[in-house]
Structure formats: structure tokens, C-alpha cells
View 1 (tube, rainbow, N blue to C red):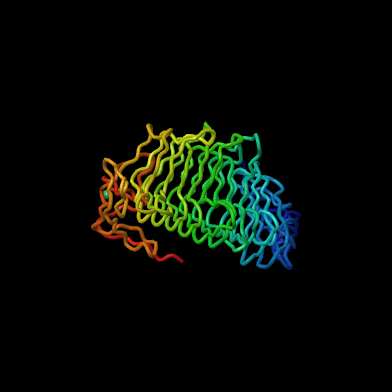
View 2 (view 1 turned 90 degrees about the vertical axis):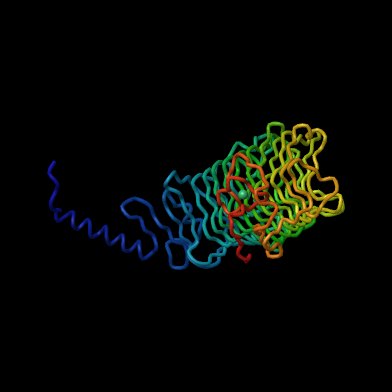
Length: 438
Ligand SMILES: [Ca+2]
């Protein structure tokens, strides 16, 4: 077929009108080039004066770009985006939202907002909100509610929905006591690179119900109790709210006035893996009633108070669950508990299937015995007072661990050497250090 070489005069006029419409739309901040995706701008003198109005009009692939300013509204999504055509709601500059987001559809991204004082949850994530992205938001003083909330429903399996959300780069904090920071249901969520704290909390930082969630590289610090029993993460085995294949790794938790974890499990729950984390100055012990609780290569420094305070309890008691087939390996317990405490304790019902070895306890604790454990040798951290738990060259933890399966890296993400070290950091022949915390 021969290509058309020139336009008719009518077509040229049509094109001029079309281009005029485009430039008018551009001046209003509304761009819809050739029926593809639009950037819908919100703010003074823009196409939309409220975020909600722009979100209501947004089609798959569109970006709602919110200009700097303070907005008081609660924004609900109107329709699904699609794979490769997300609906992105993005702050352009400092945007304070006094209210919140209600994500009710799939493929929605919320990026860069400061969200505060809403009288409700800051970001509500409905069961239909598959593949949501919650990125780079500063969420604070939303108490007594939640920063990010996927609700559980009685009699609905917790692993039912939604699926595949990414919660990354957010800062969640504030002095107004929060109920829970991040509550999850569904499957396959990734929660990474968030900062949590300083803050006050009534219940828990994370409630990760459902399957296959990964909580990693978060910095959780200086969180006080707002009156209740507070855990870094808590799950409870009721109403079919099962938890399977939870990975909690490479997180730093410092100055937490509660337990690192409290896990009760339904009978079909299991494989709770806690690895390559730093727990520093934690008031209570990590307690699990879940099958296959795997605690690998962490450091517990100044955690578990009282003379018999343990850092970890593996428990077994109906109906809370039974921590059978659990493992505690390659951990450093440094100045935890008192003279008779300081490492882990395993209840009778979980003891015959338990494997605990290659841990290091310092200072020496009466009663700590493992075939390959180390009792009473200083692990020689670089500088615990600045939160640097890398190993010095003479550390007894170097090459004293056992090789594990399911992962092969350390807290820095470096592949471990042939003979594993104890603790979250592998030593590589010269000393690594951590940058000072902000
Ligand atoms: Ca090594």
C-alpha cells in the first residue's frame, strides 16, 4: 500500500484545532496526548482543585500530580489501573494531606505525601487493592489509628487478599499514640526500607497476617509504649488468620519498649524466619508458638531484662500453638538478660524437634550449653554504642557459624563466605563499618 504523502487542507485545519486544544490543556495542567495517558494536575490554578476530583477522572496509566500545598480530604480510588498502566497519585513538592487514602482498586501507587491528623487510618488498603504501591510517604500523628491498614475479617482467611503490595521508603512516626503502624493481610507483600520512629504505640509496629510477606531493611527506633503490650511484630492464631512463610530480615530495631515479636499461630501456620537483624535495647523477649520458627544470624544486644530474662522463647501450649521444628542458630546474645538468663528457652512440647546451635553468648552464662556454641567470649563488635555490630578482625564469631539454607547473604546484602560467621555481618578480611545513623 502506498503511503499518503501530504495532508488535505481540511486535515491541516483539524490538526491546528487539535494542537490548540492540546496547548490549552497544557496550560491547565491537563495533558491527554493522542488518547494515551494523562497527567492530571491538582492545585491552585490547575485542572483540579481537589485530589479526589482528579482521582475520580484518572484512567489506567494516568498520573495525578498534586502540587505543593495543604489539602484536607479523604481520597478514595475510583477504578483499577492495569499491569504496566498504574494509576499513580504523586506529590509534586511538599504536599500535606490532612485526611487519608482509601485504596479500593488494583495497580494504584501513592507516592510522596505527608499524611497527618486524619481522625482515621492514614492509608486504608482494601481487599481488592492488589499490587498497590505505597512509597516515600511521611505518615505521622495519625493515632490512635494505623498508618497502613489492611483489615482482617472474622471467618475470612487472612491470606485471601490483597496480593503483591510494595510498601517502601515511608517514614512513620509521631508522638500521638498509634494503634498499629502497618497491618497486613493477603499474600506476597514486600515492606522494605521504611523508617519507623520515633513514636508512641499502643499495640504493634507490624501485624503481618497471610502468606509470603517479606519485611526487610527497615529501621525501627525509639518507640515508646502508649500503655499496652507492644511488639515489633505480632500475629495471633484465631479466625483462620494464618501466617505462612514470613521473612523478617535485615531490620535494625533499637530502643523498643516491648517485645521484638509475639507470635501465636493457627495449626496451618508456619515457617516464620527471623534473620540478619539487629535487636538492640529491647525490653522483652521474642516469643513464638509457631511451628518452624527460625531465628538465624541475629544479634540481640542488651535485650531481655531481669536476671532470668531470655531473648527468645519457643513455646508450645494449646490453643496458642506449638513451636515444633524450630531453630535458633548463628545468633549473638550480647549482654542480654541476667546471670542465669540471656539466650533462649524452649518449652517441653517443642523441645524434641528443636535445633539450637552455633550461637554465641557474652558474657558467660551458667547453663548455656551447645555442641558448637560459644559461651563467654567477647564478640568484638566494631562499636555497639553507635549501633555498629560489624565484627573486628579478632572476633570469635568469625567462621564459627553453620551454613544455612534459604539465604546466603548478610545484613549488608553481601554473599557470605564459605564458612559462615555468627551474627548478622560476615567478616571479609578487613573491617566493615556502619555509617552513623541519622
Ligand atoms: Ca566467614
